[in-house]
Length: 396
Picture 1 (cartoon, rainbow, N blue to C red):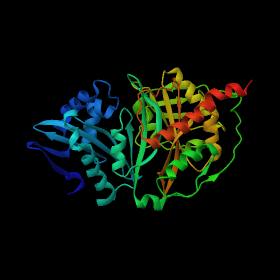
Picture 2 (cartoon, rainbow, N blue to C red):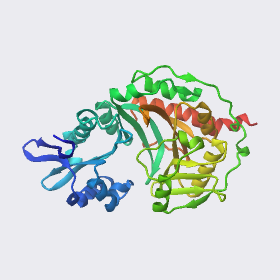
Picture 3 (cartoon, rainbow, N blue to C red):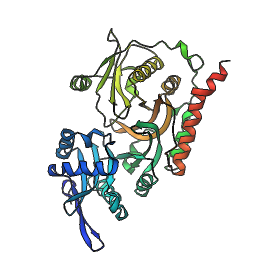
């Protein structure tokens, strides 16, 4: 079996066999029908909803799109995106028609590609996924495949209601061998690191105390005057030629394309983001700035996104710059996950920290979490209260 010719037949107890195979262009409409069956019209990933993007992904060697078919009907779908140069992959979009869920089709599809890209063909050192929290099933699925629990994305998407997702990843031995050890963390990050250490063998981190410049006086943060450009092709091409500077050099955001640009009138600061108006989700990709304080830039980004009615912004920063961690937290970007080995540079892999800021009331009523994810949520909420509530009492 080669990576591009994978196929497996599943017996269905006397009923018609199920074939798991790579998706083809004629499957597109039936794939969309499956997602509509399961999610209604609320699925926000454009790869599923946009036919042109779906076609390019099915035809592109950097995607491995599996479907499960029975009697001419697509009853399961799963996508892996692969970045060959960074040796990282992302699994997403796993969906199975309700009447077929007892057959473990999602597990079978995920394992087929996972084994191929990490062991048989050795194309990726790290594979990650984000799992929904409406039930325990997606979290148990990745757990059963050997994925490590790394954190949460609190209220990361908003369609009908707020959705929290979990972050999980599979690490090969090669990834851990290439890992740059001894991250340097501010104290607030250590509990997240320790939750990951409980699952894989990591050394104790260095811990550095960094004084906050803005924590007690938010009004002192002077916002930058940011203008907005929303021309996707222009932004994508401009970003390709960009060499990030300042704190943006420490940022990393895989498998996203920028479609939003914030720029100051004098063009001394450019911030590239990926955003989705439908689910109010946005991430920082990179940028350039002459501003010396990351707090000022990150606060300015947050204010601009809030004015645009976004609900969430995320930035992933490396785990070796405690000054930058403090500055991100001064801008009220709260850590919610720790991701070892995610960023590749040369022959090394570097740990990163997930920071996010939400602009809406936190809502976890519909969240069902496995125990370790609950611990990540507790740590996040503790810091959120400290930065958003307790500071009011300290300022009396």
